[in-house]
Amino acid sequence: SVVAEDQKFSLKEVLDTFKLCLTENKEVYLEHYVAGWRGLVKFLNSLGSVFGFISKDAVNKIKILVGYLEGDNGSQYVTIQSMMKYELDSGLVDLTKRGNHPESGCRTLLRLHRALRWLELFLERLRTSSEDGKTSVMCADAYNESLAQHHPWVIRKAAGMAFCMLPGRLAFLEVMNVGTPEQVVAMLGEALPLISEVYQITEELYAQNNMLDLP
Ligand code: 1PX
Image 1 (cartoon, rainbow, N blue to C red):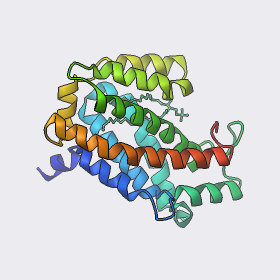
Image 2: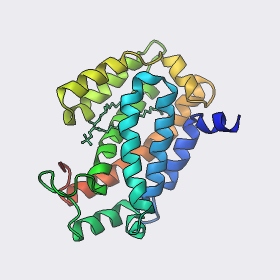
Image 3: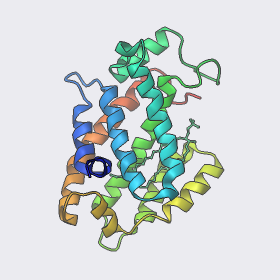
Image 4: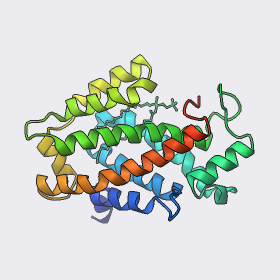
């Protein structure tokens, strides 16, 4: 059915949204960034309900950002750059401890941004893995190297258990809906530099504005 098609993940679609993310002068469109995450969540959902607690958090954060995009001040949220400037200039960000703005666009996007680093590390491992590579190990290694540093013990524990439920490498490559394993690997090779560039640009913005540790 049309609905089922719409729910179906394809790596190509995510690649296309990340391609649309960057403006000519390297600003990051929030709309496409969020759309990229929507596509990834679709993928996660297709892996089964054990990942529900993860996709739920991602969906929550996506919703917060879409709320700003579609809200009265939506024009301030066109790019990550304009969002940061607007929220900082208007005092809409809790900078050192949680206060009146626990759901600022800046702190919400920072969580997804950190997860994007996990994605980059994981996909790079997947891309270069051998046929008998274990997705659960690749996933855990990528996680420990990135996101885990920002998560309390209980989340790390739950994430670790979820990783063990990941399908094996071949099945995993198959749900990406690209084609043969070789074709997936080729597409990952195309996607990774894009994801990496979006990550780097965003990381620099957060660093420049001293916002890498927003509560
Ligand atoms: C090409 C396909 C690749 C697979 C795509 C999978 C997409 C994964 C989407 C993961 C999004 C995770 C967002 C997590 C944001 C976060 O760090 N939130 C925490 C902090 O938020 P707060 O508002 O409290 O400051 C929050 O506590 C998170 C709770 C949920 C658990 C997060 C575990 C993250 C594991 C990430 C790896 C996903 C594994 C998927 C296997 C393919």
